[in-house]
Image (cartoon, rainbow, N blue to C red; front, side, top):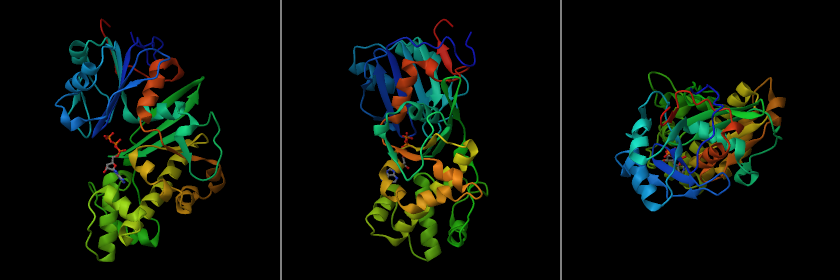
Length: 343
Ligand SMILES: Nc1ncnc2c1ncn2[C@@H]1O[C@H](COP(=O)(O)OP(=O)(O)OP(=O)(O)O)[C@@H](O)[C@H]1O
């Protein structure tokens, strides 16, 4: 019987850890509790028909180590024995994976829980601080990651353990505030009539803001990908791209401030994913922290809360590895998300 906070949590080594996103999947094997993870090259989910095939040919065929356990983080809700990924056709079928891949024990978590586990365990060398504030070591933390979508998770400390709080915070409503916002927002694409934070704060969000800025200015958009937009903003070659990045940073600051208030996150706000790592100079602009702190009547609290960009290239894998080594350090409920041979 598996209890809701798993007391029988020890994982048998070797442990396969995997961070499976919409576009990329990253895997590593932990041979024992002390060894550094053995990493495998990042693979594109589109290159493999199934996750079983990907693990077999990109991991198991390249090592003599046979993992006994697996901890996998996926972008999508973990419900039932067949788990669909949100932005990818793979279906995770733990019972089948035990047979095809020789695993005895499989735990499936949400990708932002994995980011939260990373926040609880990363060394300071992988954190770049943006502005002031001093984190309280045991204070609540929030991780926000604009990537293919927008992920949000909380992390709270209770009874000597870190408890990740997964959620769907990327889908909260996001409204205009400044005069300029009111000019731009009518041109932002809506989903069922509404603008959620994810419509603005992810790769697609950069494109949405850019197109809306171009429409508001009466110019034809000529930059296509999120990378082109941030590239043209950072090298100053496009006025609309520059404004897009400024707005992106301000909107991210506002939303981060809202979640900091929600959790009273004295432990800090942690920004995850590939986009923030690429726009650190823009996040260092005073407008980002100003938007974060602009939360009357709580500006004084906001000033004390630190913000960090996670610079670790494989942060989620590092969080999963920390969990696999000592699951009891973390309050991760595994009921309905852990499959064991013979259980
Ligand atoms: N230089 C860049 N500037 C802005 N956005 C970028 C840049 N390079 C890539 N992107 C966008 O970042 C998003 C992917 O984010 P990220 O690299 O964090 O991946 P992810 O969401 O973790 O991916 P996966 O779903 O595969 O895990 C895509 O929308 C992509 O277009």
